[in-house]
Picture (cartoon, rainbow over the protein chains, first blue to last red):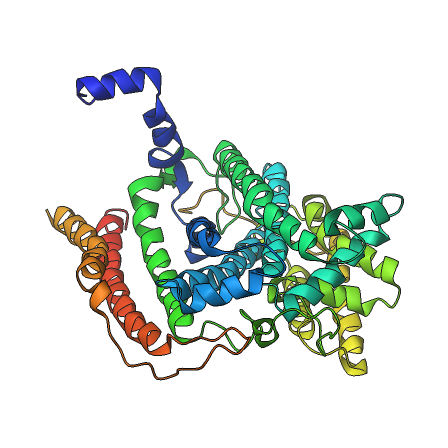
Length: 398
Length: 80
């Protein structure tokens, strides 16, 4: 028992925060074979903190009104001391957060981190992902540029396809019959209050849930205490390398290519919103485009919205679709490996196509890739139970 | 001893940019390479400053990466 001063003794007898810290960080046992794919969970927390900090400073100068929103962004860029730094940190941070989240999800799928006993952990994680998508979407509306305005209009109208409550919901979200300054103010309220609160709560639940069931590992096998090491200092030191590499890439983009060829900041969004003149190609931010492509692929508006919602809904039920006796892709059969490859290609392809103008060829490609995306999930119970899995080792060191 | 020295170096490196910004931040005067008038669209008029600060940030991160790698190797050698 370490010796403590009178203040620490007084404090810890009333608030045993050190026990929480010890349990969830210092003494948390993690498998000793976690590879670099496992750094993306920590990186998403780093990116989230960066977003909260930069967002806090942006809120000091941003004015969420129809007349002032765009000018206030211009003011931040031109006149506020290091305003460009804060804004580029936030815009680059949004994309960086989604990149690390997508890689984190990919790792979970690859190593079967959604399988027993981590189903609930996975479901909480997907809910968190949906909340972050909503946060990204509401934030995209705030600069009130051309693309902000038109993408918000298109996406909000989708809620109108929900049976019974759809029309009322759209009116509530828009604050009227059309997208106006009231909509902007509502998006601002969602972006700075509601969704950040939900994201923080879900993140804490996600981490608590992870620490209850324990971390998976690249082999996807259950681990004993002998196969585990303390998270701190081993994974603190290991993750630190990953965090610094992440920051180097982040700094390279933020300082030298903040618009990232129009993917992170759309050139069309540097022009003030005009409700009478729509841009040639309306598309949301890149992290929403895979789902936007699925929406475009279906000719009927209602069924398009259903397909788009299903694309996310399938992620929720993934633990119950995978019938394989093993978790990790290392021990699954060839069919699972090919299916995962097709899934990744379809998701990336849909994401890219969503940023392009909807020509007949692009729409046809969207349909093919959407089909592949859904087949990955629909056929999963069949190919995972049909293929022969390899024998897994009993222990990590085996 | 090596761990302790690396940890101290790491802490010092973390505070370096803050000390630098405090000392030099207000004196940065760079000729703008791009100066565009605000004509209704969002312009980036701080490109030269951005590049210059970016270079220092990257330099700092590169040193930090070396220290972080050494720190990681120091801790993980016990396990291997």
